[in-house]
Image (cartoon, rainbow, N blue to C red; front, top):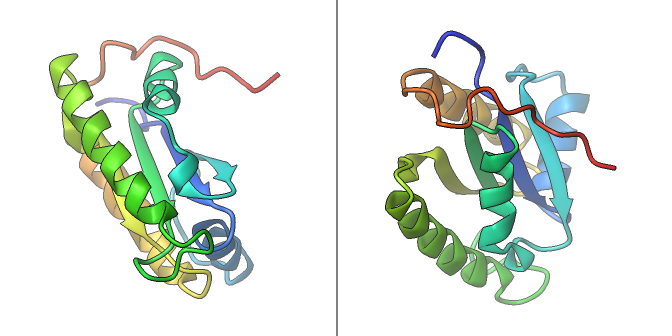
Length: 142
């Protein structure tokens, strides 16, 4: 991949979004080519959200939520895990590497973990072929 990969991250409001905020406040370095979309809970994630991110030019999608047992909505992260597995199978059927979709647990106090997770994912994407959507613009929200 010759350009920097574009990453969309769906983050849980209560944990991973706060972890991203902590990473920023703490000045932990991570790639700037990530766009964060805040969800109240990753259990709200639908496969179409991920597919739309790829359609609009993302090279990779991250789903970052509360650790198991810590979900503010009891079992939302368990639902997210099932949705991500289902979406990875769908990506494979569509000819995309399922490794382009990653699920990771990041709590509000884990700013360094957030930064490290993003950095490792971007490095992994840099080693992959470009997606069929490589020239599609990553659309801005209306």
